[in-house]
Image (tube, rainbow over all chains, first blue to last red; front, side):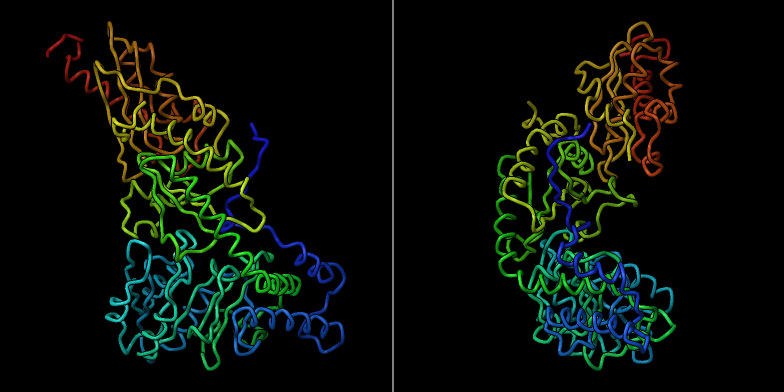
Length: 394
Length: 129
C-alpha cells in the first residue's frame, strides 16, 4: 500500500541534488574527459574546473586561500583523514586525542581505532542539550594532547557547539582543533579564520551537491599524514584522480549555499519551530531533544514516552512521511543512538525518539501534514504499550 | 525491509489488550533493549481460550506479538509450549536477521504465561490458589 501524499523529511540522510549543480556537472560527465594532472588543454580545462570549485568552497567558509581545501570522497573520509592524519603526523609530540561524546560514527570509530595503535582517546561529556562540557575539556587537555575533534552542529539533535570558545581552550595547549561541519556547513555561517578552526570537514550532499565527494579544510601550516599514497594529487594528501564532475557540482552547490544561506536559514528556522510546536503541543509526554534555539535550522528531534521509534517511523511511512529515529530497532546495531544517551536520556527514552530534517523544498503544508498524523500514531502505539500509564489510557 | 505479512500484522494487530482476570501472565524483554511484551492467557479445559498482548517495541515486536496470539488461540497448553520463535518468524514470512534475536520474543512471552498458569493452577489444571 502506498500513500498518495509524500513528504520527505529525512534530509540529513540524503538531500536532492540542486538542479543547477547537476547542470554544472553534466559536461564533465558527458564529454569533458580530461584528467586535471594532464599538461594538455583538455586536462587543464578539468584542472581549471576543479580549482574554480575549490575557490567556491574556500569562500563559503572564509578560508584564507583555495589551497586550504582538500577534496575527498565525503565526510567519512575527511573525518578519517583529519583524525588519523594529525595523530600519525604528531605522534612524537603526544598520543592523546580528545573528542566529544556526541560525534558522528566517522569520528567515534577512527578515534577508537587509534586506541588499538597506542593512542589514547578521551570522550568529553556534554550537558542535557548536547553542549560540550568546557570545564571537562580544559581538565582533560594536556601538553600531550595533539588533537581535539568536535562536531560543529549535531546532526541528530541539532545543537550547535560554541566553537570559538572551544578553539580558545584547545589552542591554549597548542593542540589542533578539528571540526566536523557535515551537518552545519551551508546551513549555518562558518568562518574558519574567525572561529579558530584548524581542520574542517565538509560534505557535498549536505549542501545539496552530489554524493561521493567532500572536503577537508586545512589551515595553513597544519601538517597531516595522508591516508592514500599514490600519484600525489591534492598536495599529496589525497592521491587518486579527482572526481571532476562531482567536485564541480559540489562547488556549484557551495556557491548557492553561500548566497542563499541567510534567507534559507531564516525560512527553515520558522518552519522548524512551527513543526516542533505542531509535534509536541497536542501530545502529552512529548519532548524536544537538543537545544530549542541554539540549533540547526533544519533539525527537528523529538521523543514520545512509552513507545518506540521504529514503530512510529513505519506508521509515518505508511502515510507517506519519511523520517529517521534514534532507536536501535531502526539501525544496524542493537544500541540506541549514543548521542541521545550522552545527553542523559534513558534507553527507553532514546528508543522513543524521532528525527526529522527539513530541506529547502519543504513547505508549511508538509510539516503541518506530518504533525497532524502524530496524535493518532502515538495514541495507537501507546494503546498497545505495557508502559503507558493509566491516566493516558482511553 | 519487512514482509507484507509483518506489515499487515503491524497495521492491524490481533488481540491487543489486557485480560483483567487472566489465568496466566508472561512478560519478557526490557524497555532498555527497546522491546517489552506481556501476554495474558485465559485457560479452559487445558485450552487457550483467550489470549491478549501488550507490547512496547518496533514493528517486528508488534507483529510477532500479534502472530503468536493467532497461532496460540484455541490450542492446548502443550501445543502452546511447542510454538517456537522460528514458527512465529516463518508464519510472518521471515524477519530481518537483526530482528530475529531482539524482537522475536513473543514465543518466550507465551511460554512464560503458560508457566505462570502452571505455577498458579498446577499442571493438571487443578486450582491451587
